[in-house]
Structures are given as structure tokens and as C-alpha cells.
Length: 306
Length: 238
Image (spheres, each protein chain N blue to C red):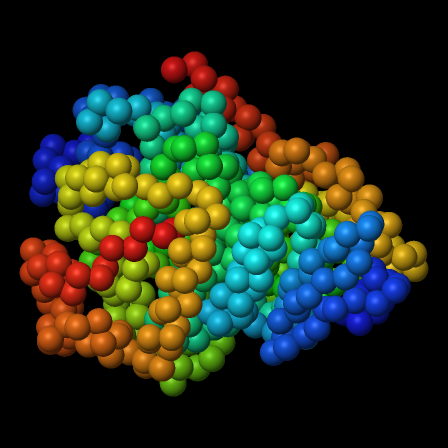
């Protein structure tokens, strides 16, 4: 697959490689990569498992411009090791966040595409996720919005879901999924009665993009195109909340209210009905325009506190 | 050590820390003021309700001000694995809990993690790993995933993984391995009173995040620090 994009308006974000997403997201020709693949900073651990390595370890970081504004960007390649966090992969994002404290870009964008921790480097990946979360709060406290874009084939699972929840703002598409335990993990540990991971509609209703947007787990819903994610990112930069006590108090109230209102719901459709959707069963098939109209009609889907 | 033994060693004159539904909360006298304690006990999985209760407790401490330090004591399972928790957005609840701890630390409330039993995966990230300094007690067993599960995912025989685990700290569960990656700063001595040991940890807190430097020194994470530093250098060239 090509890493260059000819028409961002028709290129699927889900199908695109991480490099192609960056190519179409940023202003043309503006991307400058840090520790590019030519440096071959590969995982020092995967050879122990006789596994192939990637020159970029599945994480691409650098600087670019978004509608003229200087931004720092990180993109995970979900097709390498499921986009999972290993030592080098995680350290590149940690370094980018530390650079943001020096550079003060207009925003730092994270293009999520990850199954979570890379088990072959589990301790390094887990620790890197903790470092990333601390660094994100420092970057946010310094006034730089951290925007997450979620629409890749690997979703944002495990520690990736926790990092997403630490960002200032999130845009998600239909194919984007955000969760901690993935369907297969729940099924393996708790049985198919608890979660049938082959039931794709159930997966989607439980952790998919529209459900997250409806319930406040994401701030924007984007079409599955590179251009749509660019538009969403630009809009979210301007609405990023501060990282302070007031924001976290409001998030606390938001999350407690969610348990009070929906804690007895067994399925996404029950929650959507309670939110005021007249025909919750129709939501999965809605176009983005129809879904946006529904969001406007429900009128309580602006969740500033994150 | 059990939680009761820890609390007795930490607060020899008594304390107001209690456990309900596996969640630890309260405080005790510490250096002429108070030490707040939150946490998870009894190998309890952390779900949305538990995370929301802990984050509320942390925010109460921040709102009260005064620089009260917070001890995050953890003997937990992993995150609670259920369809309902994920339906309601467990990632947001766990991230929120971590954010409250990170805000507390940034607001002058030193945060110390103490792993004294098990902890794993998302529950580990949201609690002990979200503190400024994390220490352990002998016998603690933090992990990302147990070796049988790693064997299933990596499709490697368990006996081969067990042999590999002896030589490489980067993937195998256990306190020593998390010490080597730098996630756990050190191991406390259960034979000596814990109050002065925790006080010493607070007094020696590094200003920044030194976990990758520790990981390099201890050879458990050989390249993370230099990779991050190189990114910062290359970014500055722009």
C-alpha cells in the first residue's frame, strides 16, 4: 500500500497505513519525521522471540503543519504487531510529548491504532504507557491540546484506551473502537456468554465510534476519510479543555452521572433509547449526516470535561 | 505484608483507614500532619464504580489543599473484565483516576504508590503507575499478563517462556522485573517501620519522570531513555 495519498476526501482512514494517514492529514509536504526508518531504531527484544522487526517499530513521530499551524504528531501502525506498545514504540511517543513542552506547538496529535501492550515487551510497554499518561497531563497543563484520532483497524485497546482517556479531545469514526479489555480478552477470561467476540454488531454497540460519541467517550464523530479526520482535528484543537481541578471535578460528575443514568443498561441500544433516540436500532446504519442530526436533536452530547 | 500490617507499621499510633468492597480509603497521622491512603485490597478487580470512588477520594484531597501526601496502596486484580464495564466506558474511568493522581502530584500532593500484592494491566496503570514514585514490598507480584496467557498469545511453549523469563526482565511478570524496567523505584524493608521509609521516599522524590533513566541503569529497559532524548533533540532542530 502506498504511503502517499492523492485524494484525502476519498481515502479511507481505516484502510490507510499510518504514514499515508499523516501524509493526508498534514499540510502537503510539511511532515518532518524524528528517528525515521532510515535510522533503523528497531526493537531490541523481538529477536528473542524470533519475530520480525520494523524499522520504525510501528510508531512514527514528527512535526508538521495543520492548516498552517505547527503541530507535533504520532501515528501508530496497526499492521505491525497490532500497533502495540513496546519499548522503542512507547519511548518515541514519550519523547514527542517531552518535545512538546519545549516546542509549544498548537497541538499534539496522536493517531491511535493499537491493541495495547506488546506482550513480548510487556513491562517496557506498560511502563511506557504510564510515562505517556503523565507526560500528556504535563503537556496539557502547559496549554498544549493533545488530540486523539481513532479510526484504525486495531482500535484503541488496553493501555491505548487509557491513553485516549487522558487526551484533551478525541475524534472517532465508525470503525474506531475504544475499550480496555478487548472482546477476545473478555471472552477468553469470562466466557462467550459474557462476550461473544465474533458478534461484530455487539462489539460495535459496546465500544464502537457512534456509541462512544453518544455517551461522551469521544468529542467528534468523523467519516472514515483522511479529510474528515483533518477537519475534526482542526475543530477540536480550538475547544480543548484545560487540565486542572475544575475540569477533573466536572469529569468526575460526568462519569458518576453516567453510572447513575445507565448503570442498569445491558446493551448500547438501551442507553441510546434513554438518551432520547427515537429509533436506536437504526443508529448503526446511519450516515454521518443523519448521525450528526441525531446528536443535535439529543442535545446533550457536548462533554467538555475530559 | 498484609494491609493491616502495613497500616500498623505506617501509623503506630492508630489511623482512620478502612476497606470497603476491596477499596481502601482514609488517612492517618504522618509527620505532624496527615497521610491520605487510597487503594485496592484483596486482589479486587477495578471496575467503573471502584475507579469513580477512588478518583472522588483523590479529588477531595486536592480540593482540601495543604499538600497532604497520598499513598496509593495496591493489591488488585486487573481491570474488571466485563461487557458492562466496557459498555459504560471503563477506559474513561481508569484514565480519570490516573489523571486525578497526576493532578494531585502536580498540585503539591506528593503521590507514592505501594504495591504489596498483585496488580495487573489497566488497574496497575490507573493506580500505582500513576504516582510520582512507586515502591514495592517483598512478595508483591505486579504483572501485565501472567505467563500462561503470554504463552497463549505469543504461541510459544510455556516452558520455553519460563526459561526465557530467567534471563530477560522485559516481558516476565514479577516485582524484580518491574524494578529493572524502572517502573518500581525500590523495595521497602518490611522488618523496619514503614513510616520513615515512606517519608524518605517522599523527601527524595525526583522532580521529573526518571523511570526510563532507572530502566537504563538497571538494564531492564536498555534504550527507552536514549530514544526519547533523541526525539527531543531532533524536534529542537526544526
